[in-house]
Length: 112
Length: 110
Image 1 (cartoon, each protein chain N blue to C red):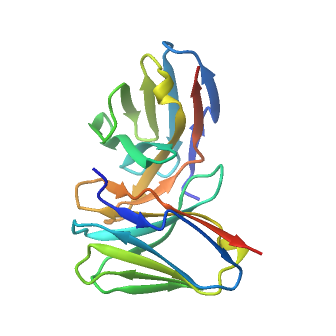
Image 2 (spheres, each protein chain N blue to C red; image 1 turned 30 degrees about the horizontal axis):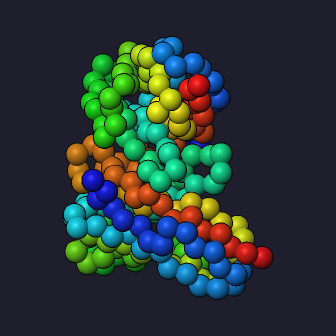
């Protein structure tokens, strides 16, 4: 157990509304990641962080922003949600030199 | 661009049979990881292989990293219903990130 929690676990929102997902870790890991998982696409990296206030884009970053003001929290924001952002979102931390990923339980987001 | 190709995408076999799933790429990875994911949960790390040609065993699961560090395989001996799940491979290239394959969905029939 890597001590990762995500909130909310489920959310339904309307197109055009802002949405923020939270990832919280208890083990003080430097690296944190946000992924989305969709049928046929697997896990795709949205953004990641390598320290407080240090973030970088992943493969599918358009329409998403992130913030990390504390080591333990990594926030993912959809500024104006679209139906194409309906997905399951996973947060992860990494340990070790091989960047092994330890995942949270996920957030199922539905944009109507 | 899909850098890691997993095959087969789906596999349904009877309990007790053996199976192998593959993870292939044209890129070299510094390490490769295998994860298993069950419905409604996040992926869970099974193993990391680092050295070309490396073989690791986890009970009935055998993982191999290709000599050129471009591919990997997962072999399950005497599959059991508890092995059912989505198996994901992921490669690290030394740039803070890892790349995931799309996964092999395995169903073991009792």
